Image 1 (cartoon, rainbow, N blue to C red):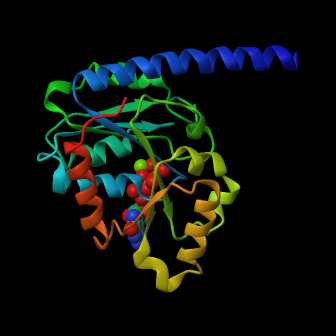
Image 2 (image 1 turned 90 degrees about the vertical axis):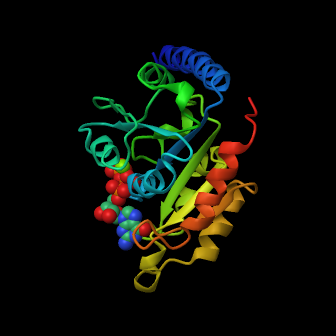
Length: 223
Ligand SMILES: Nc1nc2c(ncn2[C@@H]2O[C@H](COP(=O)(O)OP(=O)(O)OP(=O)(O)O)[C@@H](O)[C@H]2O)c(=O)[nH]1
Ligand SMILES: [Mg+2]
């Protein structure tokens, strides 16, 4: 029984990877760079994207797909910050988005008019790590209220991400969070991780985040 379960899971994952490759080809054909934004619940993914849409949404032609287990609250929040489509995917219980959901969401997005696509994944530091959505890179958001040990406890997420955003830095005076220690733990599992330090509340640190996105939107896609 256990062996059969593993085989089924492997088939499901293999099929997901095939669809993710199709998503990647489709995005590349339209010159769209996609980021898969992952984190535990409440670290500030939507808040960061709200700010980003306000500042760069038009300039960089940003489209967003949000994934939630239930409700389309995040999509509603983001839609208030942009005139462009925000596509909500309600997973109905699943703890992550999969590539077929992103593929379906792409049908609704005007890709010819889009340069950056953010996929806000379901808040969860475990499942989304294993699912390729066809993104150029995963961006993991870690807020300072979560404890600096999270990269060690959830290593796959930090290993599979190329960028890490340490968010809620406005709260650093009030919490026991050692930024250097958190970065050292994250580098233990992924020495190549590149960091941003932000507050989606005060705007601190967002200038380098915006500069990064501007550079990424202009940079060629590596498929
Ligand atoms: N102080 C502070 N609060 C923040 C910051 N970023 C987000 N928040 C707050 O944190 C809470 C959660 O933020 P969201 O943006 O909804 O977090 P999320 O990661 O999208 O949450 P899920 O989609 O549910 O996983 C909200 O009350 C935000 O106002 C920040 O930089 N500083
Ligand atoms: Mg959210």
